[in-house]
Image (tube, rainbow, N blue to C red; front, side, top):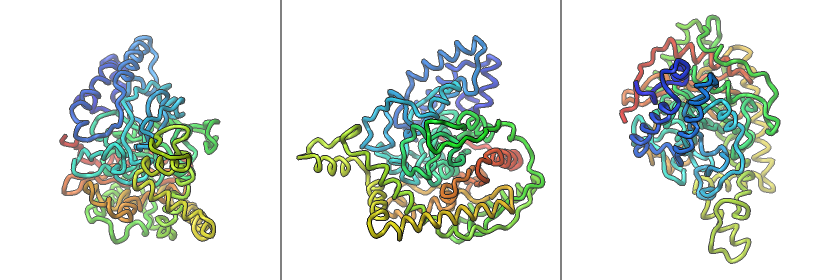
Length: 485
C-alpha cells in the first residue's frame, strides 16, 4: 500500500519504528493530490511549502525521540477555521481575500500535536448547503462517482479523506455537515457534543448549532483526533469544563448488554430501498455483536426540519451582518455612497443560497414575526431535546440512517432548495439537541456508492459512540473498497 492510503495509527507505528519519515508521508500525500485533485477539487488552497517545512522539523523532533499524537500526519482543514497568515474564505467571494491575524483553537491544538496542514478544504459558502455546490470556488466531486456530490457543507474535507488526499481532516457540523458527507463519501465522521470542542476561530454560521469535528478513515483514528480536539477553552464562551477521557480506550471494547434504540420516525417513506436494506443489515450486525435493539420514539422529529430552518437562518442573518465591506473582505468598487457600498458589497459578495437564508432569517426575526417563528421554534427545540433525554432513559445509544439516499448527481437539486434541505433530515435533530453523533460506513449500493449508519449518544458521551462504532466496524466486515480515481 502507498503511504497516503494508511490510517493515522498505521503511520504512527511506522514513524515510531523509523520505517518512514514525516517528509516521506507528506510527499506521498502531495503526489496523490497531484494525481487526483484535478478530478475531485477537494481544496480551495494547498499549503505544500508550509507542509514540507513542518515535516522537515517533525523529522528532527522524531530523531530526538519527541513524537506527539499526530507527528507527521497530513491533515486538511475546512476553510471555515481561521489560519494565521493564510487566507480563510468560507467558500465565499465576500471573504476571498481575508487573511486572519490569529489561529483557531483547533488549529493550535492540531499543530501542537504535531499535525502537518495540507491545505484549506472546499465547502458550501458559509457552510450553507448539503452538497458543496454553493462554493464560490466551484463544486467538489464525490471520489466514488465524479458526477455526484460529496455531501456538504464539509464536502471538501470528506472527499479529501476518501480520495486519500490527506490522512484525516477537520469539518464543522451545523445540521449534519460532518456526518452527511462522511456517509456519502464512505468514511467516518463525528460531530461532538455542543461545547466539547472549542469554536474559537470558527467563522460562525449558526452559533447555537455549530460544532467542529473530525473526518477519518476508521474509528480508531477518530478517537485519536478527538483526544487532540476535545477540551475546555477559556476563550470560547460555549466551551464546557468537562473531563476529557482517553477516547482510544473505548475503541475495541464490546457492547454486550447494550440497548440500542431504533426510532420509528427515522424509518419512513422516502428512504432509498438500498439505504434501508444497508441499515437493516447494520442492525443485524449490532445484535450479533451483543447489543439488544429496542423500539423507541422521538415524537417531535417531524418538526425538526422546520425548526432548524427557522433557527439556523435567523442566527445566520445576525452573524453575517458583519460582512459589509467596511472592515475586511470584499468591497464593491463602484459604490456612490456608504449605503450603496453596503448594498452592492453584500449583493455581489454573497451567493444565492446565503442570500436566501439571510432573507429567511431576517423575516423570522422581524417585528411582529419573532414570537410566531423564532420564539416558537426555540420552544419546539426544547421539546426535541427532551425527546432525546427520555429516549436515553430506555437505551444506551440510538441508531439511525445517516442520510435518506446515497449521493445524488451534481445539479440534481440546486433548483429545488426544499429537496436539498431534506438531505439533512436524519442529522439536524442532533444539532438541535446538542448531542454527539457519528457516521460509520455500512456498505454500498448496487451502483457502488457508499452508505452510512449513524449512532447518537447523550451529552458528552462521545466515548460510547467510539465504542459502538468500533464494535460495528470490527464485526460488520464491510468490503474494503477504494474509489477508482
